[in-house]
Amino acid sequence: MDADVIIVGAGPTGLMLACELRLAGVRPLVLERQPHRRDTPKAGGLGGQILELLRYRGLLESFTAACTDPIPAPRFPFGGVHVDFTRLPDPPMHALPLPQHLLERQLDERAAELDTEIRRGHQVTGVSQDDAAVTAEVHGPDGPYQVSARYLVGCDGGRSRVRDRAGIGFPGTSYPEVNRLAQVTLPDTVTVLDGGDLDVPGFGVIRAGFTQTDRGMFGLGSSADSRVVSLYTSEDEATEYDDDAPMTVAELQGSIRRVLGADLPVGEAHRLSRFTFKARQAEHYRHGRIMLAGDAAHLFPATGVAINAGMLDAVNLAWKLAAAVHGWAPSGLLDTYHGERHLAGARTLLHTRAQVALRRGHDPAAEALREVFQELLADEQPLRRMGRLLSGADIRYPMPGAAHHPMAGAFAPDLTLHTDQGVTSVAELMRSARPVLLDLADRPDLREAARGHRVDVRTAKIDEPPADALLIRPDAHIAWAATVGEPADTAVPALRRALSDWFGAPAADDV
Ligand SMILES: Cc1cc2nc3c(=O)[nH]c(=O)nc-3n(C[C@H](O)[C@H](O)[C@H](O)COP(=O)(O)OP(=O)(O)OC[C@H]3O[C@@H](n4cnc5c(N)ncnc54)[C@H](O)[C@@H]3O)c2cc1C
Image (tube, rainbow, N blue to C red; front, top):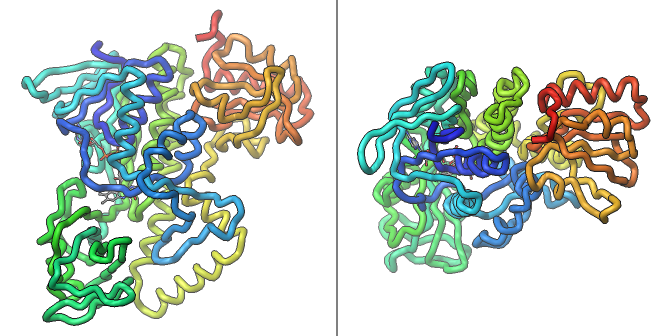
């Protein structure tokens, strides 16, 4: 075998997966068709629950330091409605203004620190599997070759070849809406008026802000330099675009002409990007030794959620693959990747599809729907709920036998922990991505039950403990929790079952 796991694609999902696998002691090989790290503009930032996970891994500080702009106030578009979390003292959704190419650089550097092999300029052209291994056909700079590994994960984007080769269906909808975004310097022939409006020769005044026309939407925004403006168009088109294919100034100008009827002269372009909207989800995230993650597994018809979902797929999958590679994965563990992350993807599809319905209507009924929606978001509870939905923090995985505790399945909150060695936190415990039994009630019976089960056991005191103990998986989700004061005769067997379900039969020595 050339590696334990082959990862196809070095986008945010593939790189995050590589880092998590390295933390779990697994040897991944990343194959990326592009010869160099890309610098084409895609996502302008990173938001949602992945930020909390990055904090738990001790990475958030360096990712924040890499941001080029100040952290924005937590305000987000939701299908044409404005969701403003600044009214809450503890906003449930945040975002980092870390453009995607800088995010990928951060992840790439982290992968290098963890000694990960990444081969750029190596395109996977075919994939096959048998009972023992999976083999990838690769076309590299020196010609075609083969590599084999125990598992292969397709993190190769929305047009995934791995998904096609594995015969996994990708049903859903492609919307006709094409969005174009640019930041350009205006030539001297265009006059910038007070308030950011533009006077364009042969056309007249283009207003700052959003303009709805019969053909679509046009947007004009200003920047610190009054001659550098942001331009946005959205229109329906029959053409299917590849979001990875670059956009040109001529394409942008053509769209402005169709949407607004204006021939807008444009000078130097600083950013040009196009994105389209699809609502698609792979029927299966796993087919034998082949798995899918990120855009290869799901495409959402709204911005701001896809990278969060893809990187969280990677975090969920990595420790399960590591268990399989190390030989102690309980039966069915790898299938829980599909069970859990397909469910999370379906939930993201639900709210992004709702955004399509809110955004695309332009008749009085649609306006009324947006107004009612906006009114509901003036109240604290709907606003909090919306924040948890948008960030993916409301995902509670189904945990067999653990339904009796409300924390089971949820992301572990960052509790402050008082231990004999001093003050620590759940975030600190999750840094090394090891599973933890957190004993919050000095329960020797539970600590004893966890012996030999490949989990770190920690005893701590906290103010108002929500449980006597929490069993936390490497992805920071709670596998099992003991209710406060739960007697040993129910707690111990339930803990033993959860340990076996997630971390396999006890080992003589902890792995
Ligand atoms: C203009 C634009 C704006 C966006 N804005 C946002 C945003 O604000 N927030 C957000 O969350 N998302 C946004 N997105 C979506 C986001 O960019 C994607 O969700 C994200 O890139 C998906 O990451 P990934 O790693 O799953 O796949 P990708 O980033 O698509 O990475 C796949 C990688 O696989 C490689 N690859 C493909 N085929 C092969 C092969 N056969 N062999 C080897 N390598 C292969 C590709 O070269 C690529 O590097 C935006 C997208 C666009 C285009």
